[in-house]
Length: 503
Image (cartoon, rainbow, N blue to C red):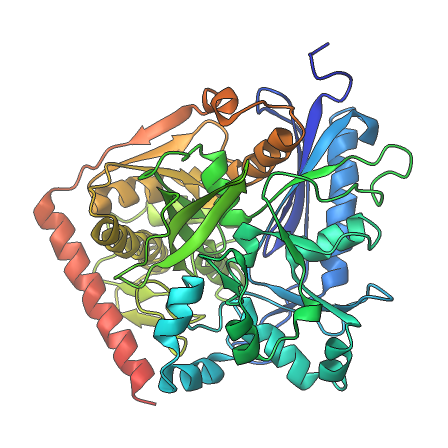
């Protein structure tokens, strides 16, 4: 029996863009049980993406119970629950019934791009960036909640009366897990809404006025490691405490133990998200990176610089689901390996606009360099190249902002199991790429935050030693080859942006 008593395990809820997952971790950070459920993606119009919040909730509750059961445990064995979530995705619900008044508007959704153009034209960009650390983009929650209030009959009036609650997915889950007793978020999620002041660490009245969001709708902002109530929805008799909450990318940074300034991780999920720990300093980017709260632990706020790539693994899903070129996502590696390179084919996967460093919501996916000999293998190869090239653009911006040379990139997420992609990433970056033993770092970060919140782990030093590398990829491409590949990619991006402007 360990010192912390009978409750020896941590349950992490990992609510992602395409699936809800739950994992049970032991004190050594090892996975004892895992369950996952995919849910439906709704595309009501081109560029619009929605989720049914009830699908998310039911799937998350079901996988939580299944993961605990698979580990041979009951909820009484759970010391704490950690929550990590797809960020920016926006839900507005009725406080009395707990029911959403509209589908969740997903982070990928572009319906508010024109409104963002208006804000930019009004000269709001610099003030918004200074207050929130973010770019004006449809990606963030502020424009989404405004849209819901404007398009659901009576919503504005009800919100002003305090009848409606706004939240990102973490808040939606916390509300329902605690039986409607806690309406809260953490600082990492709050910092992705366009409504939160990075410096004052509170909801910003000027931003609430700009987006016309009543303060009465907002969740309370709490530390990432601390008290978020008890999960009575998981067990009436022995409800475990919810003690850790962080947005998925910040959670992955914590799970990768990038706890020192200058450390960088890249998560290859639906999108790709690269974060650099900047310590207690909120570095304002000169290269259109986002400044964001990484986490708040023990009263200390840690910040990060972030580059956002909207289409990572989602590009592979497009090959699978829309083009039918591969039967499952894992098959892309074998197909791409049948050719030595993409033979001049370049894919710019701007299906949901371009993120860092371009921030163009009107850009669309483009394919260049096709010849009669171009095959599905070349397209598969070009897809992997595109994921890697987008990450190079982000790391270049980071090095410019931080003024330090990055020598190592820690990687996680589903696509990191693709050795060909990881090798290509190292080749194009010219630095080593390190894949950890436990690649479930998003869930692990939430588990660590929750465990710290209840004293299951005593300090970050306590968990530092748990991070171990599984494989390191070293660059095998010379500088000339890197420059040639980069020039071809940049040419394709310029053409894509030109197409977007000429509309």
